[in-house]
Each structure stands twice: as structure tokens, then as C-alpha cells.
Length: 245
Image 1 (cartoon, rainbow, N blue to C red):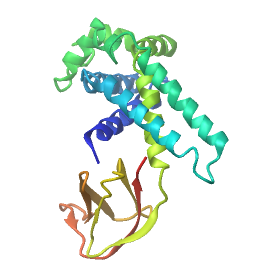
Image 2: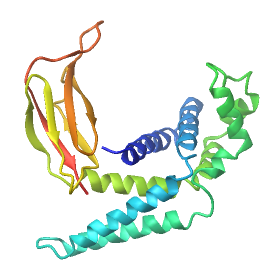
Image 3: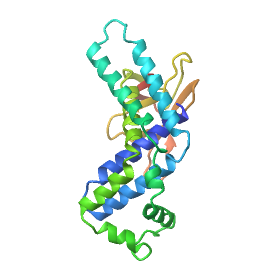
Image 4: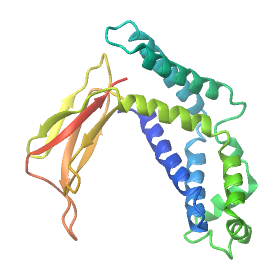
């Protein structure tokens, strides 16, 4: 529901992509991991990202401390969350360079990034050094990737923690989109960080969601073979979670 969380979601997606492909033996998997890493360096090039993460961690800490005295709160679980948030904040504060600077300033990786903007530009005859590195042992490739990721990992850990807390902050409820459309106003005193929509597996419909701090709307689209998706005219039951943390 705000650009800060959208940025965090994009980075979470890219970090998960890196972590999935990085340990694999196949050089093609390493290529995918490097492409995701290059995308991460582009997103983290924003000079204010470190400040944005620190502010959001501070806000999360204040939210956890506010609920500490409420009845029914598990003190052990609360202590674990506080410890995790404090550790994540310490990791961000301890960074001595901008997030992602190690990868952004690496000449080898810069060369790959520049050629990757051209369709097929990262092939073996265009980047022989890259090809040579890709056929090295998985351990050597893993070591180089770990080096590039070293000043990105604190941001990775902080973002995953904050999104996990947001996702688990509310209980899903069953609602109906009448004629395939659903709209709801948001509480300005407790603004939602994100909304989550769940449909049964194998559904032929998918949601298109738009929103801002005041309200959000969901339009369900129907997938038609070989045709453009169209808005469904049917009522659609789904599970909705408004994540406020």
C-alpha cells in the first residue's frame, strides 16, 4: 500500500531468486543468480534505502513495544521478535558503506551488467571472462557471489523479517467480490502495509489490485486461452488479509 513496502517486496523477490539459484551446480543457474544480483544492485542504488530500512525497523520496534502490556501477549515470543528486530537494526547501522556497494563497484560484475542490457550480450564470445568464470567449480562461483552479497545481507535479513511480521499481523477473512469487484476503505489511524488475496489452487481467475493509504480495490480477471484476460462478471469468494503492523 506504499512505495516503501513495494520496494521491499521487489527486493525480497530478487533475494529469493539469488538464494534459489546460487547453490546449484549448473552454470545456467549461476547466470540467473547473477542477473538477479545485478537487479538488486540497481534497486539498492537509491541513496535513501538504508535510511528507509532503519526507519521501518524503528517503527516495528515501537509497534512491538506498544503491545507488550496487552493481555494475552506471549512474553517469550515478544522477546524473540524484539531481539530479531534489534539485531536487524544493528546490522543496518553497522554497515560502513552504502547497501550493495561491493557488487556495484566490482569491475567484473559491472562489465556483465553493461553487456546484459543487450539481448544476448552476455554470451561467451562477448564476455569470455564471464564464460571462463561460469565454468569454474561451484565452490569458486559460490565464494564470489558471497563476496558480492556481503553488504547486502543485512538488508536482506531486515526486509524478510519486516515482511514476515507484516504478513502474520492479521487473520485472513472470507469475503466476496460482487461481480468480480471488491473495494474497501482503510483505517487512516492504522494504515495497512499490504493486502493479501488468496484463491483456491487451479483457479482460472487472478486479482488485479490497486490502492493507496485511503482505500484499495480488487478486480478479478478471467484467463481465456489465446485471448486477452477479461474482467469476470461472476461473484468471487476469496480470503483477504489486510496486514497492519
